[in-house]
Amino acid sequence: MRHFISILFLLCLISCSGPTGYWSDPRVILISIDGLRTDIVNNPAFAENHPYLARLMAEGEYCANVQTVFPSLTYPSHTSMITGVMPDKHGIVNNRPFIPEKNFVDWYWYADSIKVPTLITKAKQKGLVTLGVSWPVTVGAEMDWMLPEIKSVTDTISTVDLARKHDRPETFLESAKIRGAVPEDGNPSGYNRDLLLHEIFMDAFFRKAPHLSLYHMIETDLIQHEFGGKSDEAKDAFMFMDSLVGNIMAFLDENKLWESYRP
Image (cartoon, rainbow, N blue to C red; front, side, top):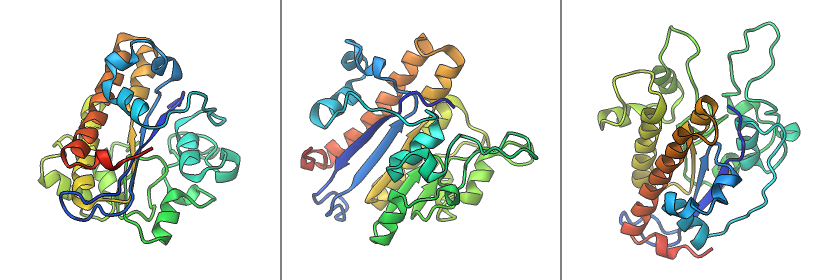
């Protein structure tokens, strides 16, 4: 995955009493839309085609001149987002580790590859509740609720079964399956994968009220690799992701949580 610019949204700092009664202290939702480039955001038609992202920019804070890390790849950049340091410091210098004696198939899945403290570890030290859905380099991270980004590279185990080995708590993915969020197909892909991840994120976000939520949207990057960054398929993918962000914002609106945010 080449990571052009992952537009990063600190979606909200919530400080009010919500429907379940435990939204009483500040919370952060960190959303990454993989491959969302500045030329898309700066396009005059951006607000018309992406109303929810446009609202975030209008009502929150927006930086027009963010410089990405080198190399500008998904795993190094996402690790820099949660560590605040460059890849040469945090140790994730590529999407995949260079291991000459092995095939080049494994990725930097595991959190213990990160050499410096992260937002996750700092939140844990403060006793805060954390949630992560498909955030890179989080397998084994000390999160309260987590479905890490990992993919099966063999025919012996499906991606869903592999994820089930690494979710936290162990019943996280299984409970989502019981509620119908996980399809029978063990290797969801494309929009179906992002819809699955979104259902899991929304369910856990509502039920657990995490202080720190990390959420990585994937398909926009993969579509651009396959069809090109300016293709109709890519445009459709970004509008699709905008609608998912809209679902989160609708939840905040409906439960009078959005109004409490002041940038």
